[in-house]
Image 1 (tube, rainbow, N blue to C red):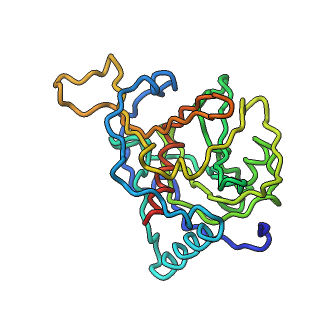
Image 2: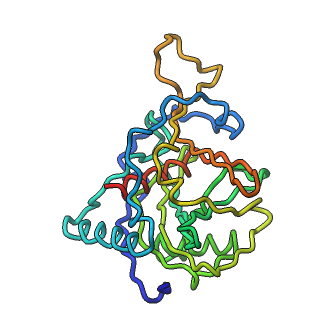
Image 3: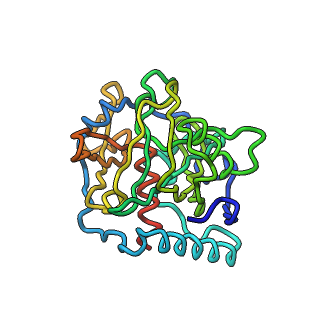
Length: 273
């Protein structure tokens, strides 16, 4: 696998407030994972195609991201727009903080796996949720890739030398006010991680072909009791993607939802296009 020194990744980035998401004070309260998991399913996308198998291999991923960056450079703007620009179907408050996450893909004998973490339940933001390693940009960070690599090393002990960045997806604006740049990368299969106990409760892997099959993508809706719509057909307060997954080897159940599921859905749309 190529090392980070061998690859220059071009990322077309927007600053917070430039993502086209208008200011709106009606941002909903944080939704606990338990409540999200109880939310009703509105749609399952069994009618959409799965990502072609060749694009779920390292060479196919490298070519897809390289082609996207070539198209973007030729146009002078992003050649592909994300399906999900943020957490909500309703307008979000303008993001004020830059952040990056690493979307790590690990080659295994049975195919690529996506590396995910479960956040510590005591954290102030997104406690206990499934997430990618990542966090806010520091003043000394060179770019979004630097932020993602630094945060992954701090959170799970993943050495940057074991990571091959492929490219950045468009900004994803979270309900908590972060403008997040997802950095998709291949991780050396022999890489090791050491979770930071104060931030990460668990590190686990999900087969990429499972996540890139839209039959496993659920659209759910949640409405706080105190904000219930007056009309029966009124729009729900919050809609989000969810991708429940159970590890058949351990029997552990993982409810992937919210921003993490939204970014995974955007990756699906990029690879299936």
